[in-house]
Image 1 (cartoon, rainbow, N blue to C red):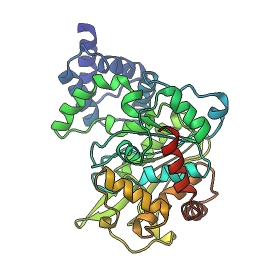
Image 2 (image 1 turned 180 degrees about the horizontal axis):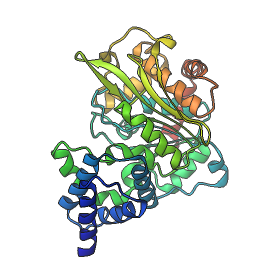
Image 3 (image 1 turned 60 degrees about the horizontal axis):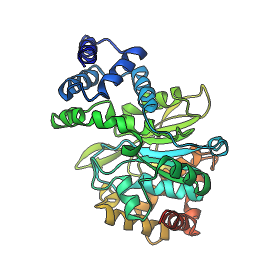
Image 4 (image 1 turned 90 degrees about the vertical axis):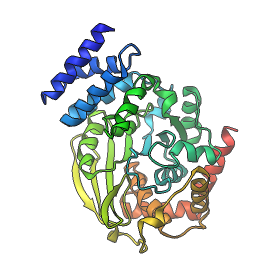
Length: 357
């Protein structure tokens, strides 16, 4: 206990001196953070010092690698692994209370034949997280690793409930709560999408601040993803420009993307390039889990053809493009509309609700 506490104390001082952590430093830090015999207050001080220094790409990647190594992994067979497994996931934290856009997108993309490993949790900064809404839709969220592997293999979809696959996080939770109570964000505010236990080869990640797009995409590339897009979309809320952890139909979106080993591009995407309807942030509002589940059903039934559908089409277009099911965002937009209008997306939801009854 004393040794690990002393190591964490030394690393905290290193960060306070504005010195970044090496890979071995991060390994020692993660070992201390995930031990029950190191005080939560000491862990919180370390996480605070890291945030105040500012996490660099190499540190984020090293934390992701160490925490992945402590996660439970689904036993994927060679055929499933050979597919281009996709995750569509936001970090959360934008606090704009939209409905569950990425969860809706995941179901639509799965209906196109993409193998989707959806990683997520219950609500933390919103009224309904991906786990809450999928549960309300009748889809099991507590799959064991073997069941999740079978879901990916046989049904092209499985939900990976973060608390089940990351048991080491139990020892970090008290420190995170201390930081949250002080209004201090930590590296864990944006690590979630990088820790998918299925290690998807393709990912669409939403972040709540545009300056995070480039570093998170760089980390994703360092972790071995073949294709990736990290986005943050501008919206006007109360006369102030805020950012969604999604592509926005209400303003320009920052996009960092890569599609081969060395390619990397950061750009801005305008909704004017798509046939979006005039709308405001209120048109994308969500509520509790049951209300959000009904929003998803109405969208997949084709009953809601307003601004919520536009937001889903735009983000589905990006997901289908990243998964190589569409050659462009325009083609992805059209394909997503067909998947909803034909009933295929609704059929996928109904299938997944039957499978694990």
